[in-house]
Image (cartoon, rainbow, N blue to C red; front, side, top):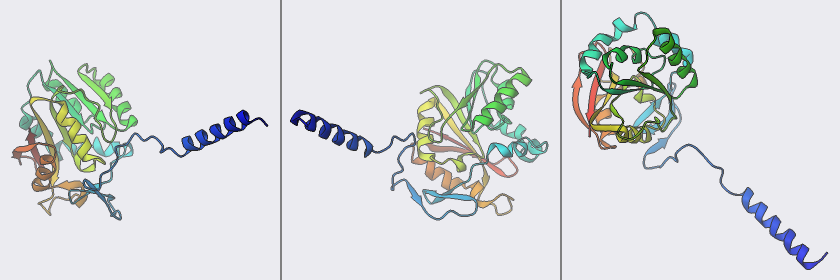
Length: 243
């Protein structure tokens, strides 16, 4: 075997070996030990903690019937929530964790010259949303398939991002909120609607509640401050945050 051929075989072996040892590509952001902590998961959590709070399990598309239960509007008084939002006809609203569109399709008539971006991480929910658009003949709703860390919204594109009982389930709350802050127009607002952790009489599992103090701490980490906490709902906070 010639010397040139031996050198060529050696070069190819080293190149292939180096390529096989490269770290695999990943689409998820790398967790920083200074941002997230990992422990044994509790019954309703994922074992991942953010600023002292264990993140709750996500309600999957198999729970769609619960999201659309007939009594939900009366239980949660969505009519009062819509009044509290004080939407303008031209507003662009992002419904983050839109699910089947329970709130999306109630917001849509309030912004006839604007639109609702119905954002969800589950393709099955996007299917529900598109079916809802067709059934209701709504033209100002746009379903958006997001990832766990990125809502896939353009910078400076929305007047409001609202999360109904969703934020506490975000697997990457820091990254999601950073993207949402970037998506806000000047004077835009982030609205968190969460069951009151301060009230032991609210019949919801603890990890699916959020206190004003905890929410304020987490929003401060992405440059937001609490503008108003509206407690007109029977069991939930309506927390308004801005830059």
